[in-house]
Length: 235
Image (tube, one colour):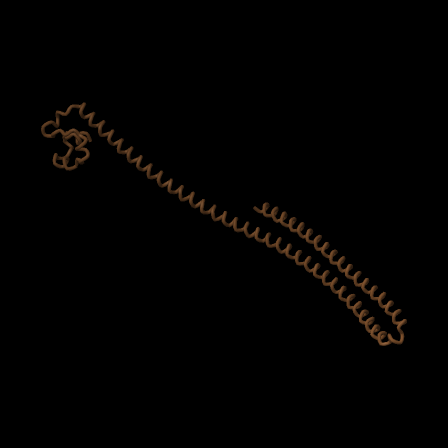
């Protein structure tokens, strides 16, 4: 009420003391103070309009500051909500990535174990085959050598029997010695042949071992290539 602000009394307005108690401190500072009793009826109309404009402008500034402060608070709340949402999203993405990486690690470990198991079985099988072949060759050599040694022992016994009769049958003994020499030579030739055959068997076994070794190396290379392909496919 302009009459109340500028101290203009009306018939319907309350007393001056009650009006003075109701005026706020802010309104007293912004308004031009005019004593009521001296100039209450002599305030010009232009000054009243100026006071009204000043009051309306100050009210607009206060409303603008209030709205800007509220908007800043809303923006801060929205930024905090966005930050928390992004952090939760990043945490969930990190957990999913860790689970996926653990599954891939288990898959690669299983593939590696399978490849190592197949290679180990292949190597153990080739080693068993080579050992069986060597044992077979040694067994044959021992049997034939024992047979030849038995024959040699029989010949020695015959020679001992012949030597007991050497005085009586010198000529016959010489013939027998020649015969025995020839037979011994034949035995030695047989032993040489056995030795050569053993050497050939061992060479053959060594060649087979080299062939199996090269085959195993090739198999290992192929397995490693397949394993690398599987790892690349899985990763």
